[in-house]
Length: 83
Image (tube, rainbow, N blue to C red; front, side, top):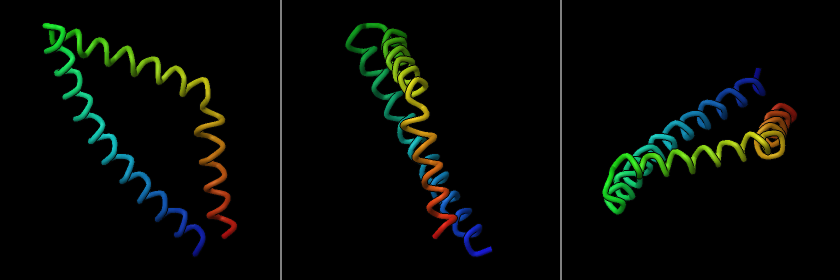
């Protein structure tokens, strides 16, 4: 029970931090897209460029998902459970 509650509480904290980080990232992304749009003279171009960039980043994350995401998360949960 103690280990399960420790894992669950760590997960809640992690999810909260990820959610707040995503909100921050969203607002910064909108500001950057609007700024790029003002430099290019068309707001939609800023969003298009930023969307393309994020698409490339997503593709790279998909290709490296086991190494960068799955393995570290699995190791973290195992470490917490064996603690």
